[in-house]
Image (cartoon, rainbow, N blue to C red; front, side, top):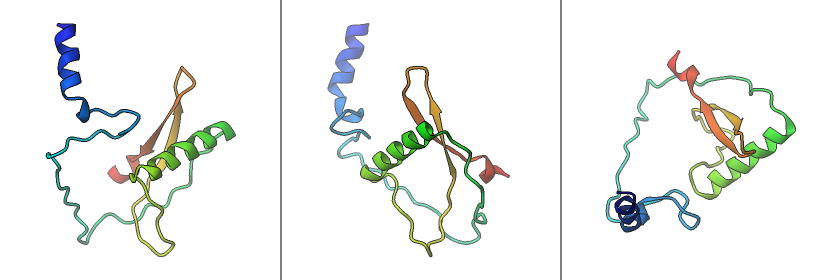
Length: 108
């Protein structure tokens, strides 16, 4: 059973993330995502960032730079109205970290 699973994963390897393609992709199965940009949309959120230790700030910068390099994030212009969330960095038990967005304010 384990061998069958490994074989299937190997056959579909393009669907999984790796060092060369960190987001993964399936060629020939692109999807179009339509975003609603019509008014009324939620009012802009004005929130202060959570306090973070210097080590957490560095990890946050590293994650954000990586996401910008991948084209997931981009810098917004100073006069551009965009919805934002507060990034939160979580340090895991193996000294690695993950970035999350605190989207709770969108639900209120």
